[in-house]
Length: 483
Image 1: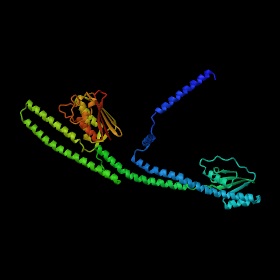
Image 2 (image 1 turned 180 degrees about the horizontal axis):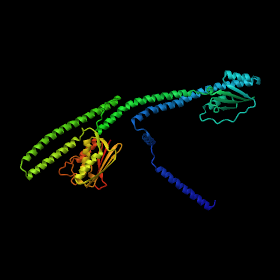
Image 3 (image 1 turned 90 degrees about the vertical axis):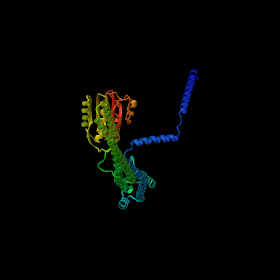
Image 4 (image 1 turned 30 degrees about the vertical axis):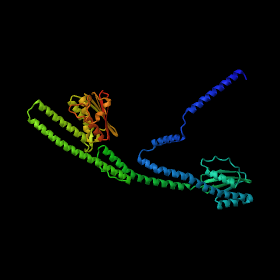
């Protein structure tokens, strides 16, 4: 071997060895995953894939729980029982026809041509077979087998076992007949048999009965499921209306299965306890406010009887401040929870706020996208919008309001050019009685309840109030309420 070729071969083997070592070290460095963890990961991936593609509704899932086992059962019956039954019946029918053909072949070979007419007559009358003898005939080339060729397979097997001669089968040419050609010593025997004599052709009756019965059962199950799902939907609507502070015109009554009735009864009792608690609180606050207002009125009357002086004016201001604070506390605690829902015009509400801004020499612009009317508690909703608008009017010169009435939500965006609130304190301002030193809700006559009342009113409608930065440089307040 030349030295140059030997050197190249050694270099190639050295590089190949280095490559194998690096590949083996990289494979060994990969941490091995236990088989159990691999199976669990595959199951979780498959479960997530199925979960995102299954229907989300209880009605549709319940139907799947009923329909899927039924379909699986029918598939098992059709593939196992029906396949065996079909094949067994076809084998027996094909064996009977093959036996008749074998008997005809024996008669042909044991007799002469002068008896062919009698053999054809016997085959036609006693065996229901149409027979023809062709002395100079030849077998045609075999035909391609159909995709589901049970009859071809079984009949060919029976002819091979019982007759053992070259043959030709045509089960496709005439759908009602089966043609069989057998190679004899004296020619070709052509046999035409009805397909029903060699094939289990009545199996579709069982399939029709099975499918028809399944459809009837699915229809009955659908009706029963609708009766069970309807109370759940009624309970859901009642809970949503109660969460939004709306009272339905039709009273909710628990119906359906025992478990659904128990859930509905628990909801009714919970709603009654909450309403009773709100009523008791409102009654107590009304009594307290009446007593305190009586005392404040007495103070104002006594101060009015005294001579005017700077001290008396200061006391009058203190009394007015106390009355304003008392009203704020009562408004916050009451929350207008007992008010019924009604239709409110968003345009009319925004026009009132715009007029209020004009009286104070400030600017309010508003746009409404979507329907102008909304179903809410009128007084509570007006207080909610009025609190945020007056808060912006107090600290800003311009306020832009955007109202979007969509299919499921009403969003009202307040953008002002005021000083704003630091991002780290925006959640703190919703706490009751909190007053920030350098924030926008600092007011000598305020109580620190404006934004707290606003969020409480929004949540009583099932929504919320959030704060963010405004494109105008001030604060953005967003009201989002479901409809």
